[in-house]
Image (cartoon, rainbow, N blue to C red):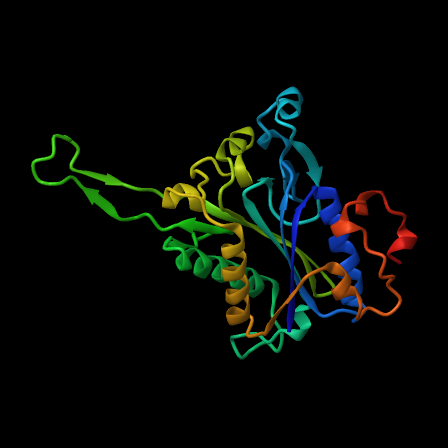
Length: 276
């Protein structure tokens, strides 16, 4: 069973600290698999392979737009998180997840990432957006290889337009002793101008898009969250249990106090003893 928590909006450092608490508990077997769904306040994150040159904006420009910069231990390069983007952090023990190929007893890192991509591909399809993988790259991309032909008699001289691929979801994970952290970021209604501050994932040849841009309308975050949960259940062959609060998750973790601040409001300032 996978427990699902939708946490609202958190700053990135708070999200990192929460993940580490849950990773430690998962390694100790004190909680089961957990999927965190949330939004972040504006932040540029640098993965283990990040190049500083892929941040294009000056510190002054970042301050004007109230964008933090944080390093982290996930894979990948530079990316952006912000309001209107649904971020998912699966805290899974891969040793307890069966592989698909019949050769391995448990799920490997690459197969795990492919499953995350499949969840996102199916979620986009639920909203009528065709997406795909791109060979040699991690993430999910719009499948706009179709050709639009001008209608007969149209005054437009160009007879057709080829629509290119654009990145709609980024994936970057960390795995320690088979327990996963970090995860994915799916662009729903995010302000895409933030991505002009960076070279997203170090890729210059393909743009970034969002569900809202592809559909021409805003997408309800709650609807997408429920679609993601359903698809996680299908792809990981698990029941999904939605929890109303972090408190409910920690009730099963022996030795973890139940005094959880109002939906993590003071998590960033708390002493370690409050969570140990």
